[in-house]
Length: 580
Image (cartoon, rainbow, N blue to C red):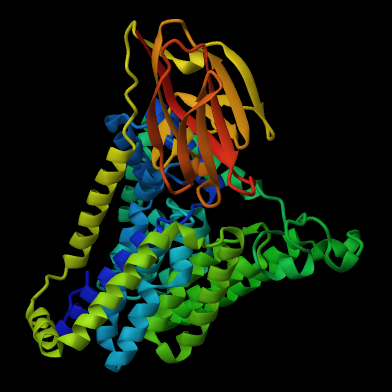
């Protein structure tokens, strides 16, 4: 759709595109929001079990196509679907490419303006490293950026006669990805009416796109159920004035307050009902939407169109009831597009919208430093080595830089770079997540099938084949089907068969406590010390041991907290006895 006219802008994209890729991949290591990850797990499993016809989630259909791909990957590789880093990482592929495209697009559009070089670098850095985009997508694990990029492309195409035939299709696909894209309908509608002589030509493409997206659900006999779940029932799912959203109703009604309670304590009878958040918020948003519709109809340039999208995206979050903390994210790509077209007017709104969006997300799913500790440490060490090299060998550094500048990278290089990283990382994660093969035969018996003589712990009770919080046993990036979920301190004693020879068992901190869990694992045989794991932390992974138990009558599995035991969820993994 767009071609680079100047080689220097292409090099800017190569540089900031790679920075964007690395930032997304590194931030994806951050702890995802647990509740939303549960949805990805459930929906992926539904697609494995019943395909599109068996999908019962309340998510719009276009992204479900990618979840279907995720389901097939898990099915082909024989992986258990759980809240693993592998699932989060592969679910985020559309976000990675959408963010990279946003950087690419920003670089191409900046060619139209005579910005100084330093301004271009500052602009692209703000797009590539935008904290709101990184915190919502790679860290939180949400895919909101994908539909907004489709919506922003629809607005752009509506402003360009050459591409106007694509606008309606792109906007329909955005709505089929996330219903919240309706926030930009007034601007799209105003532009559509203004350009009706050409914009109507895109309607057949829009219909064709919608049919292709909905066809698998129709074939599966699930079309109307899916549409009802995604677009009808969700409108009343959260009857609150605000659901952790830092907006007007957080100020006037309080967080997670009902949307039918009048503000300022005014009697709801008579005209008082107008002051209910559910009523007043919608009225205020309609007023701003009408204003945006009229301005879009009169709009004569692209920068004004994106400024109006920024306004309506912000009003959508600030004024409407039932908003989530993440829903300001929809305004962020729009205001970044406005910034690219008009740095003078769009700079301050871009800064403030980004700040509010990022801070609001961080309040609910805070960025945890331990998640990226290894990466940050590595970056610091590499920076030190690079700086020493630059200062020790300045002439050699100049030669390397000159040779690098002479390399003619193709425009698709950052996309190929991202694809390579994703394939390598997913291959590595899939290998780490491969099922644990339990030995079979007459000489093998599962420890969990033996008689349990004692089970003691101070929090809850040990669980068979589940974590102490009733999830899959998950340590590192691997799910274990067989094992014991406990909580330190704990003591579990099993009776051994007379012909027992060896105990094979793994130990680790469950992913439920990836950030803060730590404990020591001890195995006693007939009351005598037999094995010690040392201190294990959530990010340590699992350790495995082989314990001789010949002529022994019982084995005790002990976990000991390391100081505080707030979240010491300890797992005994794949334990089995090999017989003589």
